[in-house]
Image 1 (tube, one colour):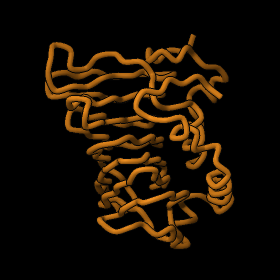
Image 2 (image 1 turned 90 degrees about the vertical axis):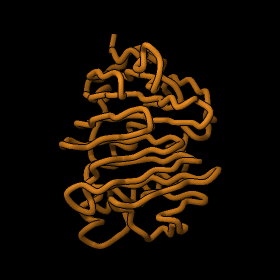
Image 3 (image 1 turned 180 degrees about the vertical axis):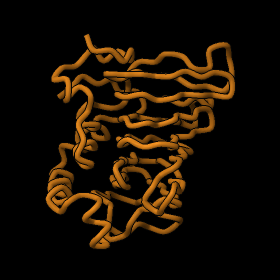
Amino acid sequence: MSQHHLTTVREHEVLWFQRRSFLQAAAAWTAGGGFAAAHAQQRSNIVELEGDVMLNGERVRPQQTVQSGDSLETGPGSRVIFVIGNSSFHLRQNTRLTVERGASLFSVSVLRLLTGAVVSVWGRGANRQIVTPTLTAGIRGTGVYTELRPNWNDRTYFCNCYGTVDLATPLDKTVSTSQYHQAFWASGTGDRVLSSAPAINHTDEELEFLARLVNQKTAWQIAGRKGVKDGSGQMY
């Protein structure tokens, strides 16, 4: 198990990949051919569903499909894992977001996070963003963790776990290129509205399992080594 530091989440929220229900669901998803096969056979793209999850204001049923244009909300103790195209997403409890439409029903242009936390792995593609009230992250093909809490004074926590991401706030911008977890705080005020942060509240294994759902590997799996998980983004 990789090193991880938790602040606003509990241990069980980052150990979801160890659950027997997820392992069985992930094995079935992979054996069934992944998203392309599910789409062709008109099967659900929800890999696992737990607790009270709302889709466009109505409780989600396991056989339903999440598509771009939909809004999702997870209640306390709830979560959902789903795949759209070449990207996979895990919404933790108490999360609200909208999946905005790209070129088709199964092409994401914007993942708009209103509150809560989402772990996501994105395959290569253009014109895709994660947007919060204080941050816009241009996604190229990467694994990231995004968290936004009501008591954080409008700060967004964002970790570019691997890959390249264009980060922008109304007053600041930078390009993040990460091999192993480069993390930021993004706020709407102050001299440093994009500032460095530690790597918190997510694990390597979460990214690895989400990558596997879309037939990918993380940067550290490809390299066969890891760095120090300090938020700097480097492998040593």
